[in-house]
Image 1 (cartoon, chains in turn cyan, brown):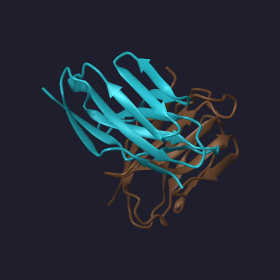
Image 2: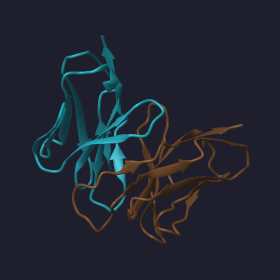
Image 3: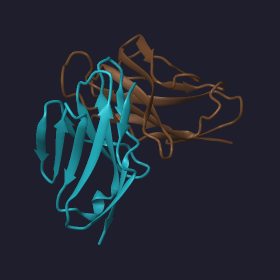
Image 4: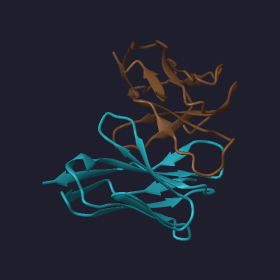
Length: 110
Length: 116
């Protein structure tokens, strides 16, 4: 079966750093994706990890440990516009779509 | 500009009625997907298609049907057999089997379906 867990909600302060964790148990693994979704809008692609380690892209970084079934998304220098849901998704071994976690609702406070 | 277009943005269905959600992409992607999103739930896969004239059931296909007659188009029909159709429906596409590795799915803006 497929199972992806991430916290339901997190709160952080403008200008600070926040880490959103994701653990997964899937049959097969062909990569882990992070998406950002503002309320009522489409998810937008943030990052992709398939090998262990850290991928950095501007203020956002994503880490993967395949042996632990674990990933995190790190957001630095938080801005109010970063208030959104962050979705962790795994590409399994088949040809089908992604398996998504329920998303983490991130609230940024002034 | 290349992208994925879903229409309509809002749709209302009467009891016993079938409705069709449109999804068109001009990204030259082979693979297309339909997801359903409910409050407090992750996106769940309804149907997917890796190539024209072929499609497969996802995790929650009951009460839905699709067609893939053209590469650019992947319409979803919500039939009267779907007893709880109220949700936010998202269409996505990716490059497909031609490319291995990083294949992010690009999403349309979604259609919000409600029952009258």
